[in-house]
Length: 217
Ligand code: PRP
Ligand code: URA
Image (cartoon, rainbow, N blue to C red; front, side, top):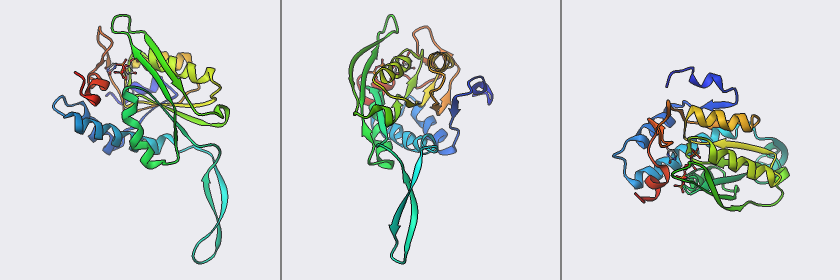
């Protein structure tokens, strides 16, 4: 990726950590097995989550070490909520949950119509207390941006205020569409790829994330 492609998007963070980039290259490789693909998606999501959560609010908490009392810090507020966009977003949940075991999980069911490329939604369930929660929407792919915009819009309609979007591979068209619609949503990606092809697939991309994760091709 040219170093400055991401500069046109102020609310986009490309996570260039060497471990993330190494695993992403393995993920893109067409010869990577379904089993390895699943593991790599989880590992990349876990590494990315560290950065995505770096500005979570903390609050003081009094504890006792074996030696004396002290005031430590803990993440403040209601439990962080992961919201995978089905299906492929599910592949990112376990990795992040290993890092944040107390995280709640909501689900947004959505697929992209093959011909129109428009998102079709079929399920929505998130925990209550939406206004006070931090939400992280998970989807490995941000292509045209239709699914991402619809997911953020649905969460907003339900009352969510603090939303981040985490994907692994994105296209400039999709990032633009998402940030044009929701300019205040921080978007994190491991790669901002070159472009979409005529069928809405990201180039060079990694193919169909859902099919590669679940072995459905
Ligand atoms: C893929 C991907 C995103 C969407 C991205 O899902 O996981 O949700 O496409 O495309 P967009 O940015 O153009 O909306 P897909 O529709 O293939 O559903 P699946 O996860 O059930 O396979
Ligand atoms: N969905 C995918 O799974 N891959 C793409 O490249 C685009 C949309």
